[in-house]
Image 1 (spheres, rainbow, N blue to C red):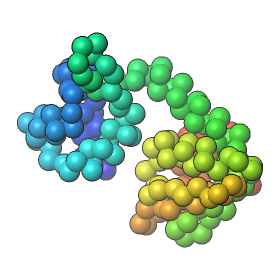
Image 2: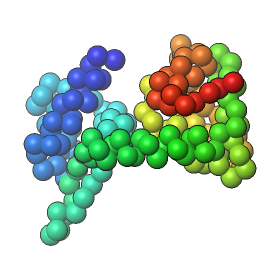
Image 3: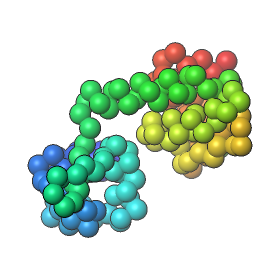
Length: 158
């Protein structure tokens, strides 16, 4: 975990200090910094950091990282989407089930996916009113609920 956090800091710094237009370029810069990662890992890191691409005004795009205020605003929207849509949460050793109001399963699943919770392996949104959350190996439902409560203090799983 420590290596990932350090790598995320390096990625953030590289994007802020270089005009990077592709993952290949970023992978090469990471190698120069002493980090060897796969393209899939880099993609997950970029998603976690909420990295986007913006037009350079001429012929291409380059990576950018949202400001702290933009990131906080985005997180507020994710929290609102979750709180607006969930009805109840139940879990066992490796799976969490979130029941949602009708039509809210996609937005709740998307909110969970984008919160960057380390406990989550992935989500599956049901057709209408349920979200299944697969937990990473060794993570229990209680761990997920605790992490979610840290992200969303108003969350009450009861």
